[in-house]
Length: 72
Image 1 (cartoon, rainbow, N blue to C red):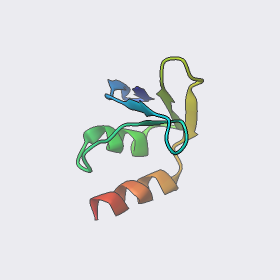
Image 2 (image 1 turned 120 degrees about the vertical axis):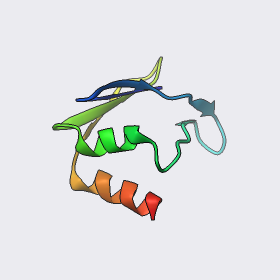
Image 3 (image 1 turned 90 degrees about the vertical axis):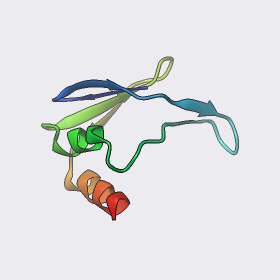
Image 4 (image 1 turned 180 degrees about the vertical axis):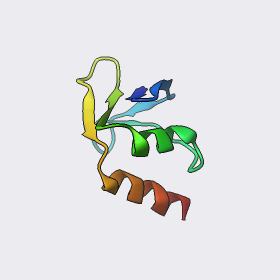
């Protein structure tokens, strides 16, 4: 999985699962600086997984709130 922000690209190891539904999972530590890059990216960030359409996400305040909650 690749995370693209206005700061650059970061590779994250990811696992594909099929149960209970098909999904891709990447587990990161709450202190991972790439999470800050997502939160402070200018305008939007992208999550890319080979074989799937890229997910383009606006860098809205909700992203920062979720990261802050995880860091609790």
